[in-house]
Image (cartoon, rainbow, N blue to C red; front, side, top):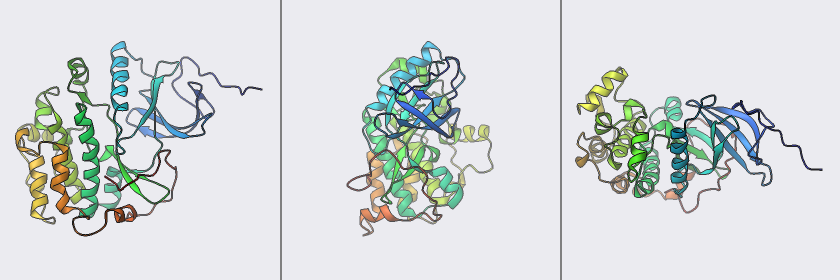
Length: 327
C-alpha cells in the first residue's frame, strides 16, 4: 500500500509536523524564525536526509516581480560551490504561493550570538573565521555577486560530529548581481543593517561593487576582536550619518592587537573604496601573518579549539565534514 501523503491547504503557508512538501520533504518541528521567515526541520522521504526548509515571508502575497527575483537569485546561489556558503538544494512555492528554500541543516550558532554570550574572540579564531568568510566572498565576487549584508549574524559557525567547526556565510537575500542591470534595479530597494552599510551603499544602493563587502568584513572583524560595536550609543540615523560622511568613531582603535592587524581593519573601513583592499583574496593574504598557522600552530588544530561555553549537540548537519583544513 502506498503511503498517504498529506495535501497542504492552498491558503496556508504554515506547516505542521507530518506535512509533506513537494512530495519529498516530510515536515518536522519548527526550528525557529529568521527575520520574517520560518525555518523547519524536514526529512527527504526517500533518502532519509535531513534538511532545513525555510518559508520566506509566510502569509504574504508574492508578486510576479518578487518571484522572478527569488528564482533568479536561487539559481545564482546554486552556482556557488564553496564549503563556506550554505548550500541551496531546492526552491519552489507552497500551494499558498509562499516561497521556500531547502538548505543544509546545520548545528551551531551564528557569530552574533557567540559574541553576545562570550565576548571578544581570541585573535587567531577571529582571523580564521574572517578568512573563511572571505573565501566565500571571493567565489561570490568572481561570479559578480555582492552579498551586501555581511555581518556576524550571517556568519554561522557549524559544528560537526567530528568536533570540527566551519563558518558558513548565509542569507544572500540582499545580494546584488553586477552583471544584471535588471536585478540591480530590483534588489536596490532592499535595506540591510545600517551598521554594516558602506558609505557608497548608503549614497546609492546600486552603485556598489565587491569593496562594499570589504567594508562590512572590516567592521565584523573589529567586533570579533573587541566584542563590541564601534557605534555603541548611537541610533540608526546617527550611524548612517557618520558612515555616509566618512566619520569613523574614535572607538575604532584596536590597542590589544598587533598594529598591522589594526591597520588592516581601518583600511577595510576607508570611506573611499579605492583605498580598501581590492578583493577578498587580498584580505585573506593580509590576514595570514596574524593567523595561528603563521604563528606555528598547525591549521588542523583549529578544528578542535573549544568554545568557551560548551553546548550540547542538537541537530547534526546534513553536509559532510569539511576536508583538507578549514579554508
